[in-house]
Image 1 (tube, rainbow, N blue to C red):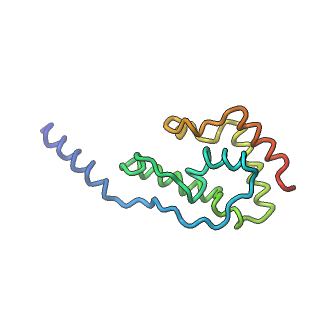
Image 2: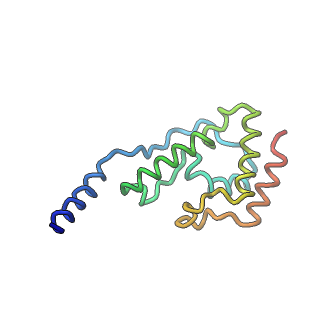
Length: 140
């Protein structure tokens, strides 16, 4: 009986790998115009979820984790997408920049679960201060 259950689990694990997952990176429509030091921080720590320049990790190809990764990227892009920055109205851009700083200030972004495997995305104190300065001077 245990062998049958084990084989069933193996077959299910194999079968779920064939469930399609959207890992596309659509064309960039208009990037954020930020100073180079800010752009570098955003690209390193934010773009893997909030842009069309996602570097899909190896575990993003293994179900069921791939489903969660694809869902998180979709949700993140809906909330803020640096690859569509030009599509936002000026007022919305201001609100998003303020929100970016609030999330960073409260250590809510990048997400801890993401940082476990992406240590290069950790924001240093210098990174935080750079983002803070940018957020307070963003084209008001």
